[in-house]
Structure formats: C-alpha cells, structure tokens
Amino acid sequence: MTIAKQILTPGFMTGMSEVSGRHFKEIVDTEFNKTIPKPNNLKYVQIALNMAEIQKWQETTKHLNNPGEATVRANWRPWRDAMIDAAKKIKHCGADFLTIVSNTAHIFADDIEQASGIKLLHIATPTIDAIKKDGIDTVALLGTKYTMELDFYAGKLRDAGINVIIPADTDREKVHNIIFQELVHDIVNPESVKIYEQWQVRALSSCTPSRFACSSPTVVASVIL
Image (cartoon, rainbow, N blue to C red; front, side):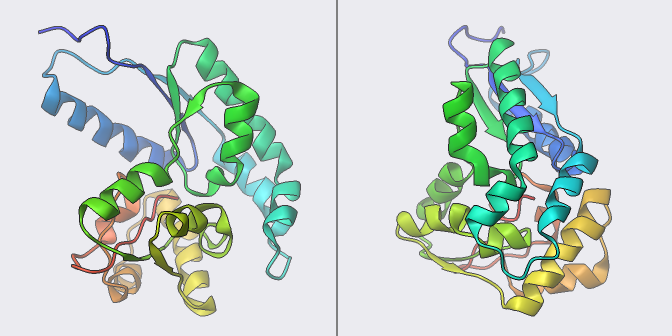
C-alpha cells in the first residue's frame, strides 16, 4: 500500500522543548500508521529551534511583575523573528501547512502566518474541536505562566464559548516551574504529578505532560509547553 498523493505535507516547528517535540513526533507517526500501515511514513518538513536561546529571550520578562501581552511581545521579538525565519524555510522546503509544537509560541501565531505566507494550524483549533466533541464547556488551562496569564491562547477558547479556569498565582508558579525545571529535561517527579492530579485534568493533546493527567468528565487541561 502506498501513500495517496493528496496527503498534505505538514511542517513542524519544534525545539520548544526538544522533549515535547520528540514526543509529538512519536505520536504523529503512531497515529499516521494506524491509518496507513508501514512501511509507509508521513512526509514532513521539520525545523527545531534552540531551547537555550528561547529561554534566554524569555529571561527578559522574568523580572517584570505581571507584564502585559504587548510588553512580552516586544521583549520576545528575537524569538518571533527566529520563528518567522524558520516558517519561511519550512514553506520553501515544500510544507503545505505549519504546526508549532508549543502553546507559548502561539503568542506570535498571527505574525508568523502573515510574514511567512504559510498556513498555520493553530494549536487551539484542534483543542477546541476536541473539547466540543466531548461536550465539555469548562476547561482548566495549565502551561507556562505566559500561556496561563496572557490572552493569546485562553482568548481563543473563550471566543469559542468555552469557560477557562486559570490557576491562582501560587499554583501558576508551581506549574510553570515544573515545566522548565523538570519536563523540558524529561523528568517526571511524583510530587509534581500530584500537583497536576489535584486539578483532576485530562490532557487533550500529544504532549509530554499528558503522562500526568487523570480522567475527569468535566474539566480538560491543555498542557503542551
């Protein structure tokens, strides 16, 4: 059996972190072969950014107390430019659309799509579809503090008629630190697992932290880095 010609070629922008990108690709390949068996494999274009550089750019907002989205976007401009450059290269290599394997990076989703000219599959779109398919109207959003505190992601969910619960300040800091001190290093700490389980969430997406999740009929959290 051979792959049909009409299958689109996705572009993957990864490296935010290497761990989440690696697990994402493993799941994509597994799901692809459920539909089209081996020895076929999905053709794709991938560029990985350097997580160390991204963390350096993010450090510019670390000292700020509750910076607004405009301030964060301004301070993170080098990251935005790096992602636009990567998106242009992905398009040039023949990808039909782009997927950015990071929630936080979607603060620049519109900029990347407009500047690169490649169609972006926004990470919130399949999340919203899955939430609605399950008949859920309220979700808990776990991620980096920027994903939780700013509106670029939660706003997409709210615009779709979904109620979004954000953890309190102390819990947001705990979740954020777990991501950068443990998950990006592929570390699963039992004590950290308990913090996620306290939210009684069910992860929707193909992401490393989904291993923390436990079932709940009413609440969903999207926790891709």
